[in-house]
Length: 312
Image (cartoon, rainbow, N blue to C red; front, side, top):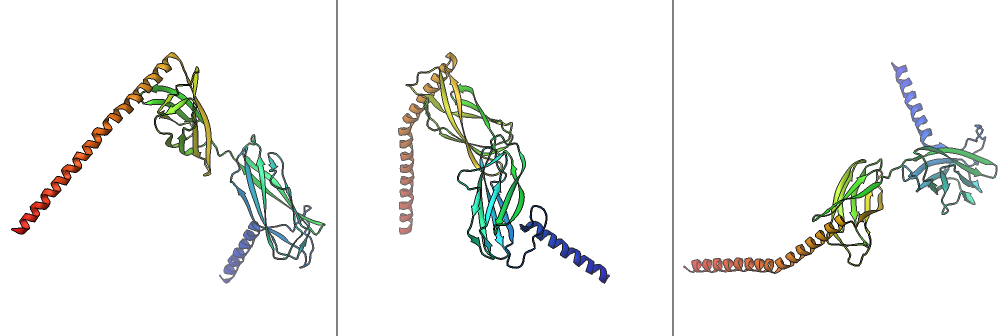
């Protein structure tokens, strides 16, 4: 029994050591696979943290790579770090491919940051990237890791459905492959329309393949003289990794005999509705005023009645 317990304890220790090596990457191995024979004064680099932001990387955008390098050996003279990129990656002009330092003292920790562009036509998948560390002019270490690429965005299609007194009905469809969360549609900077209703509409979430109908209260501007009008939409949504994005879309409103009549009816209805509201404003005011006066009179009556009873 004692032998079994000793064996289990040794197995646990070996497992912990293996796990520690898998999370703490060591650069002391050369490309050929031979371990450099160095004394305690030789530099030894270890990667403590490699981060990719955002995760995953999106085609057509940039991704930031962060390396934290610890020198757990002796002083490193003239160290250089080189990021090796192949398609679909390229280094952003704001970053430098080589990061040079005069020296890295023993026990020093440094963080390297590279901004990398992802080609817009990149397919989803894991792409290998190389990273080299050169030290003391004659030693270098290789490390390879994967950048995860995945399209996290979606797309929308917008189309005119009908025009009625309820407004201009627009079908908003999620035509991408991902869900769109917290969708908000904004209507600003319209060249062809005057808004007579809200300029922002909260939609909520739309799964891929789903659609919703949006009724926009807008009428054509009087000075516009064209056979086709455009309604501009700014669609804000949250992608599958939590980033907020905006897509700008246009809805074509052709000026046919039918749509002209529908737009005229909508304009007439909107003007009539606004006029009726303006007419009702004074009557509403007097109604509220009368109600306040009645309440005040009742309160005074009860007050004096209570006073008379107290005297009796």
